[in-house]
Image 1 (tube, one colour):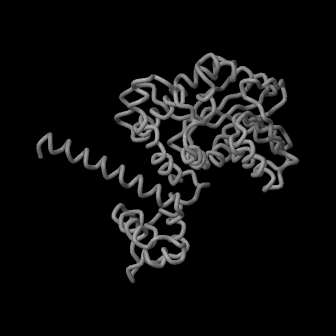
Image 2 (cartoon, rainbow, N blue to C red):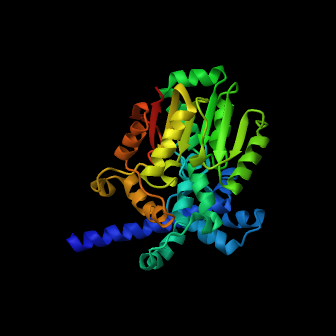
Image 3 (cartoon, rainbow, N blue to C red):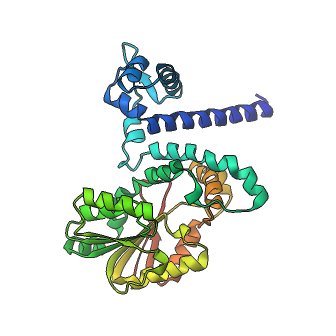
Length: 343
């Protein structure tokens, strides 16, 4: 095989990957994967009739999803999810869940299409001006982080876990729709959780989630920009999930980390979960996760969020006064998680 043919085959694989991403995202957004999981062996006509969908479009999608390996066939020729797909594509609580990531990758097309214009103007394009789908996809792709933080990150802070079990206080900065705050309150029924969020729609979603879980007596929602946090010696745990890089440049990040340090009681713990940007450009070529991040970077640049490399994250947390700063092993390769404690 010539070098040109090899390169051509590689590019063809990229095209197939793009096509598969869009097909998977359609299956997640439309509920077709969930419908097939609930009724294995169904045909395209069955799905269309039972879910009031256009049969010709359902048939085209199921054929494509089968071609790309998302679906398999039963003995009588009906469709079923391929092995492992139910957990990977539908179980948003599983650390290995990628349904939200397919959805996000598809939604990023909005940024890619606008990028030529941004190249010329140099303007930012705030996330608030994006369509609803990318906001929903970002939330969906981050849902498994809550279980990862509670079940894996806190295992590295046993004294902090013990405090929460005895009735301590947790602070979730940039709480978004409240997924992590609710998960913390559920995992530690004696603890109180303070969820800080400045975005109105996210706060409304968090309120509905808290009230739906009957947790309003222990999860306290605060309409506050994390940059204005002024708590002192009050909490046993502080969490930031995909928050630090949203706060601005290094100076703003340092300020937030210092405010968080002061908000903790001595011996309190910090968990920061961030995107795992590598320290060297070679990793973008050699590591598939970092290659995906390179594409996501176009969106993050467009909305004005700087990248924090792994080394930079460790150094910035240490510079705020935290001790025992270290990255931990956890099952989410799309996250870089660091724990530390206040002295």
